[in-house]
Length: 332
Image (cartoon, rainbow, N blue to C red; front, side, top):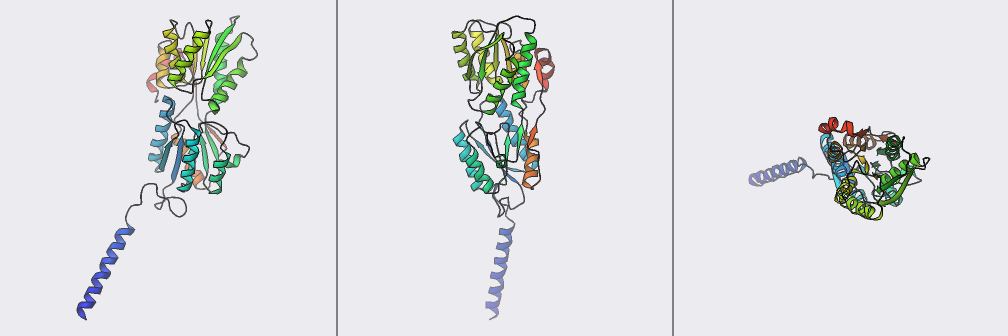
């Protein structure tokens, strides 16, 4: 009997040790608790990025990843490779994983209502970053964090009208648009057009998407140069397209920044280098370093706090005379 009692005590001790070991084991990274969050209390953020189409986007991704780590937020990251269907699939995966918050930068403006309603029905708040969506139901997302793209287009137009204020014209403009249907492409085009529309000397003689990439910007600019011999100004919706177009301009025997004035948007380091070389005349800044602001919003919406419907970032306009001074401090 004594032996049986001793054996029973030993078994009980072993079971107790095993249970203690299981209870102290660290949860898997990103695992969801019963309430949708992690069992260790960390917030889980599902982030669906557009892709890696430009230097701006790479900096934006890095900012989100670094800020999430610094804020102690578990990040589930998806690269959509510039395809809306990939983003929708990623968002549905985040819903299935019961993340606490979903954030994404939409590839295009339209076609999001169904998947956003699925997130709302699942009780998961959504934050839009960098790009907005076209929906009549603004309750499908909590807030938008990013730039005013119309204002950026207007700033580009205002620089142009000031630069050519004393000239009679005509001023022939070619436009490299961003991804067709995207918010920055639509808004930067609209803002620019609104500023120049009242002065008949400004004429947009060609406008085509360069898909925000350097290679496509070069390809489209080559086509512009073959079709038009009288181009005065290039307006590019982002720096990567402008830099690709500069290669095409130089290959055609012309001087970018002189023979063809170059206006661009974003503010990546390569564009500032091009400004110091006289190849880009002006860059309208679009700040990609949204990570810290995003994580603050994530914490607030996860806690059920009210947030503003729109949060903007601070940005500026840089001309050639400011480029050299600003270049050393560019973080992207």
